[in-house]
Every structure is written in C-alpha cells, then in structure tokens.
Length: 484
Image 1: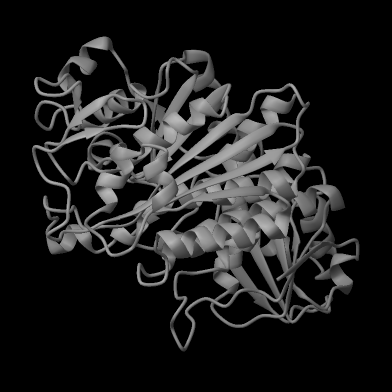
Image 2: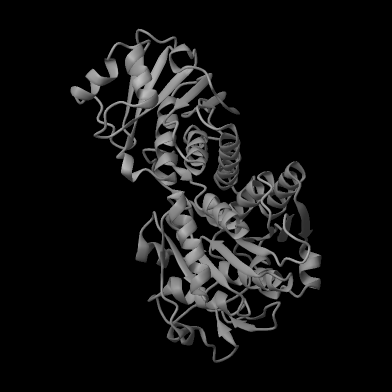
C-alpha cells in the first residue's frame, strides 16, 4: 500500500474522496470546498439530517455533480472540541472500513487542514488499519486494502502515520495468523526479517542458549511442545552512548492449550492470540526504528507453546527461574507469568532504566475491566502515569489497578519461594502482576494486561474482528515522550 501526502484540490481529485464533517458545526475547510463544488449539496444533507457529523457516521455520494471523483464518502468527526488523536484514528478507520467492502484504487482523505501533526499521524494510521481484516486465508476477501492512500496534510506527519499504520498492521497480521503458521521459531524468523528491514539489531536465543542462561521457568512451559522455544532480543540504539535503555517486554505464547490444566474447547479457540504481547512489542520496535526515535530501546519477546504431553511440566513442580527464585506450579494454565519471569530478568541484566511488559495475561482483568480496557499495574507511580498519559493521548483505553503489598502475600509459597497463582480467583489480574514484580528488581516497571483489547470476536464500527494491534501506538508514544 502506497501512502502519500496530497496537495491537489479536492474537486479535481479523480481518487475516491473521503471528507470529514464536524458535528453541530457549519461546513468549513475541505467540507466547505466540497459544498461549494457541489452547489450546496453538503449543506442540504446536513439540514435534512441525512448526515449529522456524529463521530464515525458515514454517507456515500456516488458521482456527485461538480467533482471528478466517482465516489465521495462523508464521515463524521464528532464534536470539534472533542477531537483528539484517538478519535482521528477511529474516524479515518471507520471510513476506510466502509470503503474496503469493495476493491478500491486510490483513496484520498480530506479531514481538517488545521490538525496537529499527532492527529494527522493517527488519522493516517487509522485509514491504513480500517481497510485490513482478519481474512488472511479467504479466497474472496471481506475487506480489500486500498492500493493507495492520500492524505491532505503535512508530508512529515503523513509519513509518520504510515509507519504507525504499518506497525499496527504488522502486529495484527502476526496475531491473526494460525498457530500452525506462527510458532516460536517462525515468529523469531519474522522478527529477524523486520529487524533487517528497519535497521534493528537482533539476537535470538534457541533452547540451548536458554538452558545455558538458566531460563528454567520459560523452558518448563515449553517442554510439553514439539516446537522449541525462543527468546528474541531487539535493540534500537537511538540515544546517547551512555544512556540506559527503555525495555519493552512481550509475552509470546504462540498457542496456549493450558498444558495439563487443559482449557475447555471454547476457551482455547482464540488462543493463537496469546502471543499478542510479543507481537505488540515487535510492532512497536518496528515503528521506533523507522521513526528513528532518539532513545535506546530494547524489545524482548519470550516465545513458547504451552501444550499437554508426557513431557509437560506438572502441577506441583518446583521451577528455578533465571533470577534464582524458586516457583511452585499450582496451575499450568498460569504460564505466561512463568515465561515473563525469565524475560524480565534478562531485561534487568541488560541495564533497562524502565520496563513495560505487555501480556494477554489474565481473564480476571477482563472480568474487572471488560473487553476494551487494558489493566495497568506498577511499582512506580510516575512511570505508570507516563504510560497512562501516552495511552490517553493515543485514545487507547487503560485503567490502573491497585498493587497493595497485601496482594503479594497470596503468592508466597510454602514449598518454594513463590507460587504461580494466588489464593483462589479473587484479584487474579493483580496477583499475576505481583508475581511479575518479583523479577524486576525494583526497576521502574509497568505491566499492561491486554487480555481484553488485543483481540475481538466481533467487528467494531472502525475495525474488523480479530487482532486489534492495541497499544502499539501507546508504546511508540511512551518512547517519543521519553525523548523529550
């Protein structure tokens, strides 16, 4: 897909044209230009309430008089005073999704020429995300990506938006792939291709290196599968030589059967998405490198399959993590935290100044916050505030959960140092985070539980069902702000 800034007059464009309208506002800017070219058509449609400008609302106009475009799509931007980067992303995505019902050539977006660079960036990213679906293997596609996207705006911002859109779609594609296609070794190969394409340094640890590095917790999860594990370490060296890196850590369980604590069939159906944290880190590292952000950043992705077999790790097993801490296994379906335990230790050893980990870690987080909101948990309020503010800037929904010391008592072991689940079902998202906190050695750390927003069973008004690419944009924004 080609994405470029367009400077041509709206009325003279031969592309399919998308024009944004604010709610409860007279036509201005590009919408006024279209209104003038069509002799007041837009104003009449607004007066008759054929379209109101409500956010995400769309109305197609086929071959309207006065313009060269064969199709003009009006899209509501909502109230002007409520516009932000997240709403820009969703409005553009809604329009792009509507147009992707059929194959299109070039699509030109004319929203608001006064938008700030961040709004343009997220709008362009939304236009790219909306027209891509989960139907990777359908002969007849439900959604048809546009061949070309033009955006009336600053070329630098448009290019940055293209990078964001590519990165979100990279994450979505990897999560949408079947587990027969994406497993630890193939994910690592994908990461190597991304690294080569955008100038990231990469290191891949196979099962032998993982054993040499004493990653006993991660290796235990992997031992039930015929697919050997991997650890991917990506490095973007954008900062000063003496600078300590910011670490992004992702859970990469490429398929989670639950192991011997076997999930029921319906709970296993979408478990190809249990590597969404790892895919999000890869997407973010792709964007960070392409944007050449002036900050050292390392991305670490622990990759395993969790499968039942005669060699699976068992209930009651005692694992020794890379840090030396011992773990009693009380549920083999609480495996993601076991993987992250060793990966977090590597991040600390590599000198991380701050750490963010992302994981589809607990159903308990979805019980607490629903399917659209990620949970934030931390050992450092200032660092958590930085992550939360970046998410808010991008329009991605996150809410902080408490991390009172009393929760840590639930994971204290009687046979080993700690156990991999808390006492019963209550507060499960938090006790999982308290488990992870044991491995960050007091480094400023924020855990993002993306079990809800990473994957959706039903399409949304602005995006197809399946992988969402949630929090790629937030991670990039965190790094950008860290560069300031």
